[in-house]
Image (cartoon, rainbow, N blue to C red; front, side, top):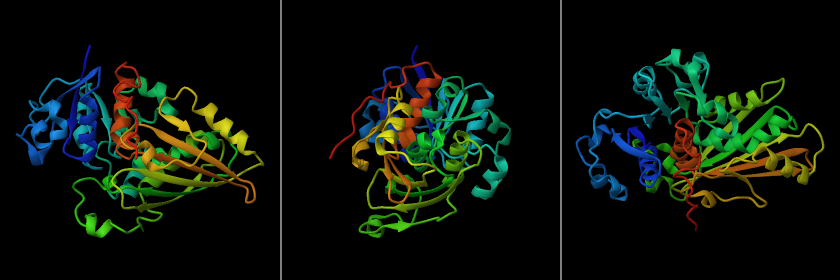
Length: 341
């Protein structure tokens, strides 16, 4: 049986990337898509790179029978759109941040508004298969991870789970401009971001509690504290997260590498590298490359996580979750190699 997919907000970068992946997916078919600014137009005509969908008309609402809905609306708008589908028994993957934080009070504190559907938070599964694969398989509602958290959590998870680091973590991360979305507005045009690097939302970015929440579930005892500093860099796609944590005990570089490889054994999209990975090593793919290094002189673990913010950081991860939820091969539609250089 072919899985019928609907995308809410196909005109945003994440929705558009999900549609691109679905063009060649062997077990799923895009049957409906919304996008208010382009409603009534044909998807393959307004976006020629999606020419496989030349007969699919963008609508104001999902008006076809669907098995799964992917929502690529902005945070806070997404929950309201997802809720009717969840209540109707349709499988839903929210690419926004609306269902990632389990505590509605924490959502309100970091997002600046009350949660639109707090009664659904308890059933939402955090959609990182490397941590929650079996729960995702049986889930009806999946909260797709943020791009920064996906890279950061995957870089740190083996060390936190093994208890080899202290619970004081610093994440220094960089993102490409597409992470801001298509409709963000001022501050992201070429003349402003070219030849420029800037930090933003220092110690107040909503991805900070998301990283802490997931690492806390892996840690024994004390909940890790996370200092998170994101930066905008002049590239289109990519996340590079450099994570620092003091070591609890002396461990060697070979021991840490073995620990990481054992942790990610059987996970098709996360790989431990011998050399520091580049963002371009994941471009256009659903891969995450992780590189842990022991700083013996200072007793620190430095762990790097690299991924494509529209791939493993958004749409690719959503398709991976869809595959698991719908009983399809986990790698279906996601086998493509990264584009390099």
